[in-house]
Amino acid sequence: MSRPLRVVGVSGSLHEPSRTTELVRAILAEVGFRIEIESTLIEIAALGPGFAGALRRDQVAPAVEEALQLIESADFLVVASPVYRASFTGLFKHLFDFVGQYDLVGTPVLLAATGGGERHALIIEHQLRPLFGFFQALTLPIGVYASSSDFANDGVTSPEISRRVVQAVDRSLPLVEHATLVRRSEYVTTW
Image 1 (cartoon, rainbow, N blue to C red):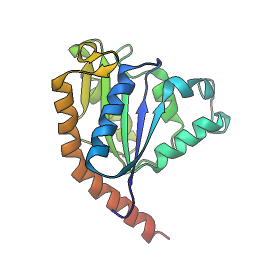
Image 2: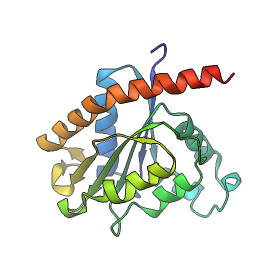
Image 3: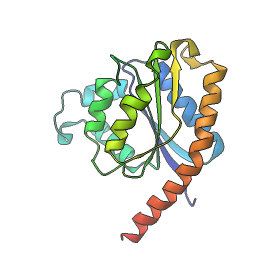
């Protein structure tokens, strides 16, 4: 690729420090270890006050508009939310309510989540995958789910989760690189 891959991570956690944010950081680091990237991490905990009460995109704070533009122009998204009442957090969903309906078509998305135990792992299949299916994004086949016991001092400590991150990135990058080339060539040919 002629320029670094634009990778945007989105953490739906409402707290800082956050295990969810640490999981996104670990995935971004693994991607950056493999290929040249420009990465940005968007944290809902920091942005929430800038859009929580907004009903339309023109009502969000400038920092939120900037985050939305980064999401919409990303070559690759890494999104994660903690499980909250059997789903993603409300502010995570509310942020994506402002994303243009067709702005993520074909964008590769690696899905991740954190929760208190293994029983919540299906959030990736039953909540996150349908959300990004609505956007016609390319949800990547392997997601990463981590439980509270997989962290210490808010960092990933589980060898199993570290292996899962490596596996997800290994299997995702060929698809990401192909999708990025296709999207960039479509962009060039439409001008």
